[in-house]
Length: 94
Image (cartoon, rainbow, N blue to C red; front, side, top):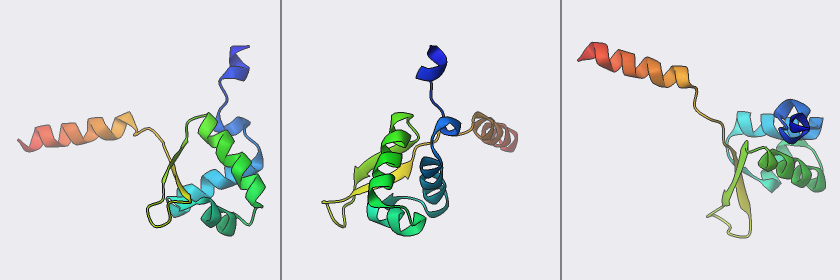
């Protein structure tokens, strides 16, 4: 039962994966921007964003240019290897 509780990007429908890729390639966008880039319906994009927010890979923020809209962006953890690599380089430079 824990397997169904821990949903991942691979378990999501194709529309959610497409929205993820649109955000990955284009950076933060409004829902309208995602609709334009993905060519999905607004309803499908809303559902995909809900699913992506549900697994914690998308964050919703205020779009300051138009406060009636939200800005969506990916929320991916930083790779641990990249942090370790920069520390090792800075340690050697000292």
